[in-house]
Length: 231
DNA sequence: GCGACAG
DNA sequence: ATCTTGTCGC
Image (cartoon, rainbow, N blue to C red; front, side):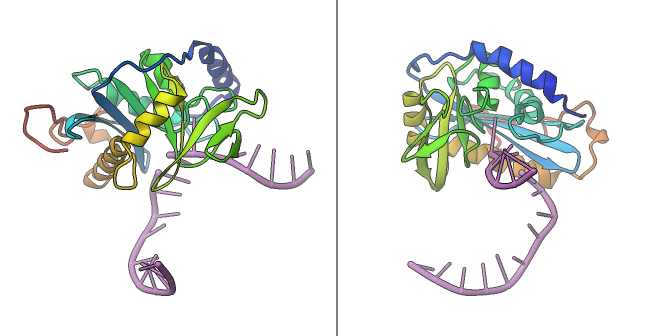
C-alpha cells in the first residue's frame, strides 16, 4: 500500500493536539512493542513484564500484509497496525507501553509512540536508538524551534533516546527506561524484539495460509501469569 | 540547492 | 528494518 504523506501529515498534526504529559501513577506491568519484517509480511509483538520480578506475565503477536513503505517521520503508518494487532490480544491492560521509536521527539511532535498513546489513551514512552529530530547536547535533545527538552539520552548498551509518547512526563519516562535497562537493553523491548525475530524465522515465507493477517495462537504462544508455555 | 532522515 | 561470516579487539 502506498502512503499519502499529505494526508498522513495532517493526521499527525491533528492528533498531536491530543498528546498529554501527566505524571505516571504507580505501575506494575510494562509492555514492549516491536515489529520485524520478512518479505511482504510484518510481525508485531507485545510482551508484558512485571517490573518487580521481571517475569513475563503475558505476550501476544500478530502478522499483517499489505505493508506501507517506510518514509522518515511517518513510521507509524507502517508499524502501527502490526503493533496494535498484537497489543489488543493481551488479556490484561499493561500500566505502561514502551515503543520502539520516538514519541514527541518528532518534527510534528507525533512519533509512533505518541500515535499509539493517543489511540489507546494510555501511557506510552518512545525509545529510539538514533535521533530523528532536535539538537543533542549532553543528555538532552532540544527542539530547535521552542528550545524545549523533547528527549533524554540514556546509555543502555548504546544510546537510547527516550521521549514522551503520551500520558507521561519525560522525567517519569526516563526513570522507567533506566530502571528497565538490563543486560545492555531495555528489557521489555528486547523481549519483544526477540519474539518478533523468532516468528520471522519459524514462519515459512508465504502468508496466505494463515488467513486474514494473523498468526494462529498455537504458533505465537501466548503466555500468562500462572499459565504454562513460553514465548 | 544540500544535507538529514525513528524502523 | 533487511541482506549476511568472519574477524579485530578488550
